[in-house]
Each structure stands twice: as structure tokens, then as C-alpha cells.
Amino acid sequence: MAEKRAFVAREDQAGWCTVVFAETRGEARYKGAGKLDVDFIAVGVNRAPDLDKFVEKGRVPRKLLVEKHGWWVKCTYCNAKVGPEDSLKWHGDFAVCERHPDLNKDGEHGR
Image (cartoon, rainbow, N blue to C red; front, side):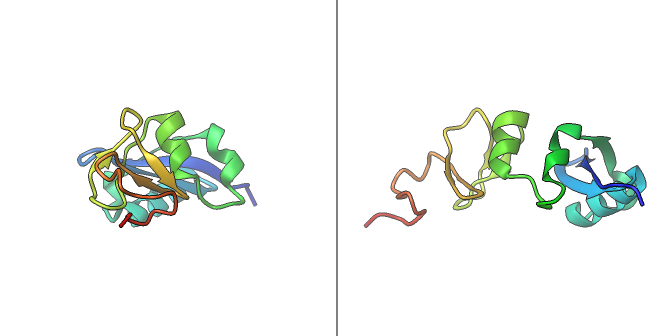
């Protein structure tokens, strides 16, 4: 049995991508299509060897994907598209954009 490796699965039409862990490219495409909710044929995959260290954990921290790999995510509060060029606060794995300056360190709105 082969070891699982990290792949980035990408749906280019809308620009969505995700990290999946799989033994083969085919398995990675299948998993990526499921996570992105698109047809198998619409998904391309590339190896991401620098993310192999997260195989056992089963997920890659979103903060790392944004800050080190240039990905964008949606703000937890307003769904705005945010990325490394934005001023973000991180509450665990959740990004909060600068439009919400009244959030405290626990992600609660101040009163």
C-alpha cells in the first residue's frame, strides 16, 4: 500500500482549490471533486510535497495556506474574499477581515 501524499485540487473556472491527501493522482481528483462539489473532469491536481507533513493531521491550517501559499479564503463574518494582502485576524482556523475591528480576541463582538 502506497503512502498518502498531499495534492492541491483546483477547479479553474471559479478559482476554487483545496488540499486533499491521497495515494494517487486519480484518487486526489476524486476527493477534490467531492470537496469542491464539481464534476471529476473539472478538477486538476498538482502534488504539494511541502504539505505532506499534514497527512496524519488530515488538514492544513488555513492561516498557513493564506500566509505562506497566497491562497484566499472567506471572512468568517461577512464572506468577503480575503487573502495575504488583507489585514486579517485569526481566531483558530477562522479568518476575520478588517471590516470587523470591534471583534475581541475570542471572536466575539464587543459591546
